[in-house]
Image (cartoon, rainbow, N blue to C red; front, side):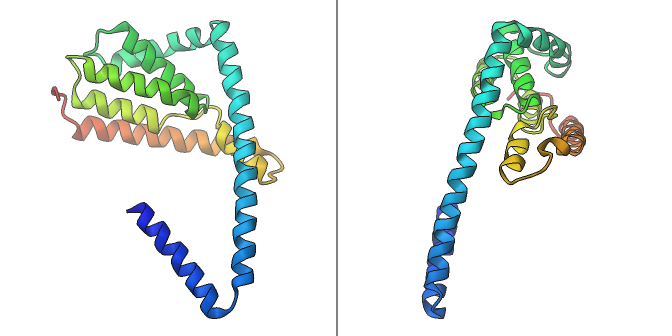
Length: 189
């Protein structure tokens, strides 16, 4: 469906530019957009490489293990029916990576945790809902991707979005967890 919509937008844009005689404007928009997309890709790649490297150094220095220990208790509370320590560690590491704004580092952890949740015999619908919420609406202590995008677009202080991002992500997570508690049954899938 999305590819159909994108194709429709492209075809209608080209048809309109030919009909109105502004093909030069369309050509310059295409080249400028491609240049901006490549610049954004390069700046985001550099930021992700930097923070991914910092995460690897933190893992080697056992910093991530210490942070994971902080989230062991909340994970136990939310996923009380699970008795797999490796799964709890994976979920805690995923939460840690998301809180640090390292969505690319969190993705492999989330896939691993979801596979482990599916293999767990005590997994309930609520556990799936909680993990999905923790993975998508996590509290962002360091919004690295947002700061990188703001920096690439010339923001004088790319990190001044921190209070708003923290408040918005905390509210989204709280509302999501409350909603999951209300509407998601605590029974096996």
